[in-house]
Length: 67
Image 1 (cartoon, rainbow, N blue to C red):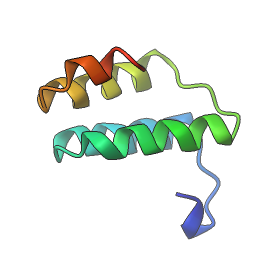
Image 2 (image 1 turned 90 degrees about the vertical axis):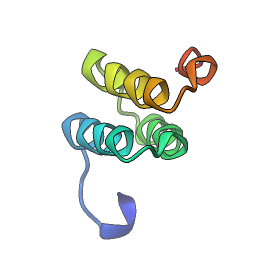
Image 3 (image 1 turned 135 degrees about the horizontal axis):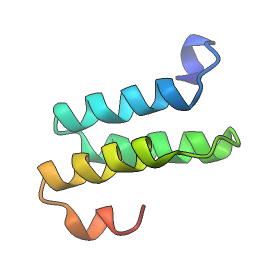
Image 4 (image 1 turned 45 degrees about the horizontal axis):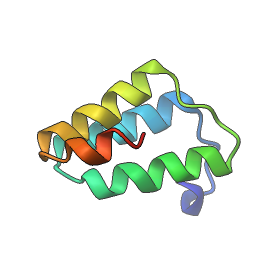
């Protein structure tokens, strides 16, 4: 998200995490969480839920536990 020079917030990251889940891109979910933490943004319950859901859809339950 930083490449587009837009100021991302928790809501926009949550939308991106959810989109990754819909597209089966569970690996990208972890990159987005990393970006959030690096930007000093704290994911809320909705973002965590979307991340867990993304991992679950791809049968990556062990990875979901690391969030």
